[in-house]
Image (cartoon, rainbow, N blue to C red; front, side, top):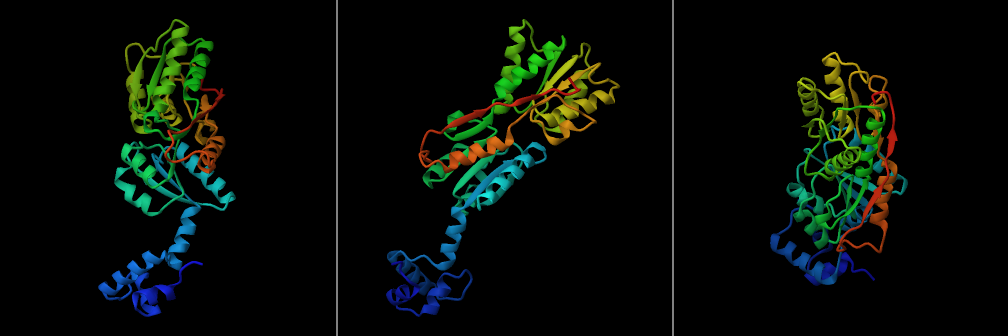
Length: 326
């Protein structure tokens, strides 16, 4: 049988009320008496009702660590995850960070909540957090990002193939001066999309006409678009590494009086809701968000995959959404 508060009171030589106060934050109690009660509780293996409730909540809680929620793709991921967890009677705890920030600063907060698992998306997982989660036997899954050196489970769209699909689309439509607006260079999403795009052009005997960095956000991509389109030999097509950058480039092109796709074709990646709006009708790669989230939860629920394992990576195919912009 589980030890009771009465047994703790007897072992510590105090009243039952004193045991209750010892486990109530801020309750008045002599420090020495509190220390004696806690020591007795630990030796007996006693867990207070409040702690049992917290443990039960934590056992069904998934923590999402997310940056860059200004990018509409990630609120879509958040909504999908929340709905799937609600359907399985589990809780969702969300920590938001600045885009591309590491998570070291909030590791104590994350671990204090004692989640059953952690999903990390749109932010960089440091070795410190990976090590801390292994020590606490908390399973971690990267979503829409892969860090093979971190020995962490990951689920992502096939970014390499998506880059190839966009490149093939632009080649087949007859564009000759095809440029590229990249994201954040040290992320797998940027690297794999760029590699696939570059490879398909090389196989056709072509190279990227012009490059610029948009850092995965609207402001920088708009500036990059204006600069590229103001050059002496502007491109006739641009592949942008995500949709929010593609929309920014389309706005920049219109600002310069260019017609899309007659003067400039534009393609993106993600298929955020705005990509299908009449104002943009963006050609893009649709990421299978529902399946990606489900695969992340499958990795979390798989009892054969342990937090100390080297990590499992699952890659899912995207879908080319051919629209008017290209």
